[in-house]
Length: 338
Ligand SMILES: [Zn+2]
Image (cartoon, rainbow, N blue to C red; front, side, top):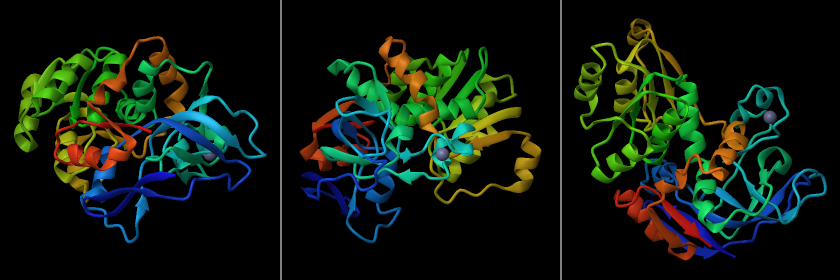
């Protein structure tokens, strides 16, 4: 089997790897229908997260179950399944509270940019779809594996409610799907912060009512201007830099909420500023598993089409091109077909 392996900064190779197999009786192995490159894959790709050894890449997946371990009871061979980047038992107290990405038995799923993938804790992690979906639904179902679930969590964590004014910091796939999520949750006004025309267009398509192109203090000033000097009720932080986090906190009205899902890189929060900002902060790695059943329904009944964030589709063996296009911001998100 060949799969994507990162060797160092901007060095992704498609090369021979051992095919995954059942290691624990709770595992499943799935044959990928599609996988993709994540914005978070760009951190190690750019060398910002150093890697010390060649690393199999990818953590977004959907596909057909090929094999299950002896202890797997609900997932069966031949089912079409979607799971998240953290495997979870879905039964421990933390899972029951809806935080499967902090499951007491969680395991990171990796190496998904390949034709086959081992998924631990298959019963808790995977959600099966009743019938095999038509091919045109695959991109949207794949998006649920991470970016859509993460955008949804950003909106959920920011406590988006009908009628609210919401601001979204970040115009990557997660930010754009944060716009879609806020719309679906009934936000009345959605301000997308983006400087890229193609992304602004998609943001509008997903439900953005206003676009703010400025960043930093100017971006905050523009949000305030659009909200009678008050700030947004809910702000979705979908980048993970100091600038984006500061921008998110300062764009939120007192009593409002920031949902932060950008993996923080060097972000520090000033206690005194936070104290006087009077905002709720909630975020972290999205408990995608919590949202999968609902989001799968919304995709299958045609309510949402998050697969639109994939603006580049490549055969899996051209995975390196997919990274490059995203690194150079020529593509929002690359879908890979084995
Ligand atoms: Zn758990």
